[in-house]
Length: 352
Image 1 (cartoon, helix red, strand yellow):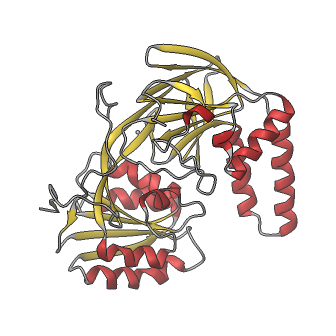
Image 2: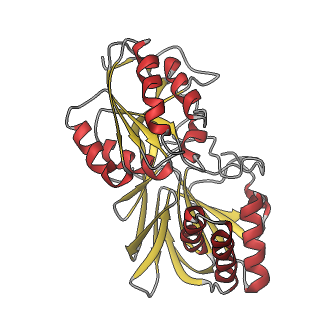
Image 3: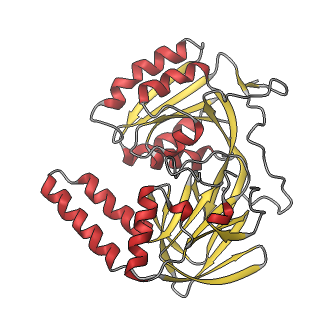
């Protein structure tokens, strides 16, 4: 079945398809996932920054010699540093002042999101060493989720131009969510931070109670010249469409398609919230008829309140309304393993 047309909305069963500085024009053509990647040259300058708070204790320090070894094999010069999460943004800004060819970042999706916001608009390519829990960014790019294997894959990596999403000046690579999802994201972080199983169990019970007491939001969605009122427990805005495969429910098969995919949950009542949590948790949300999809390059979310919690790539922000979503087509370059089918023609060398 063909992909839904831009700006259209439909139920999940009828939208079976594998189909984020300024928003692209409305007549921007869709990007094909088969467009050629860029070859990576030799003698590149790399700045590697590892988030000490990501992964297991001491893992970042352990990985740095491996980075040096692999990149030396490609004749790349590399400077590495390990910094605490609180100093990450400052370290990235300082590294980019040297205009490296590649900024290599080790951390979770939140760390990657920080790097994307800084790399956007520069000529520096972004390399990723996944050290988080979900690692959606790495999975979508085909980067191994094991940090050591991800470093090894740099030996044959190529450069791809990918889209970046934005909401009210905040960037995201995978998705942005409002409603029950950001609330449970905060609860999830408390569960992760718990040092004892009893404390963890207490936070889990608190999360269940919070979900049970959730109330739908009254929002208006504006896109493609239309505005529609919605009562919803949650809305997810993805940077390109999410997979319909229940085994990989949050993966994206296209990262350079130039469109936002908006998933609106219209469940109601306690049974509805239970169904919503089950479908999102199990990966079967794509088949839930109460979840509809909208494809659009831009979206505005209106509400009577002044501010609202938004989860961008798993990091919680409190933003002013209306929320203004847009997509930056092929806005940054990332290092990723070669795709199975990569065009030979039209390739150029990074750093040339």
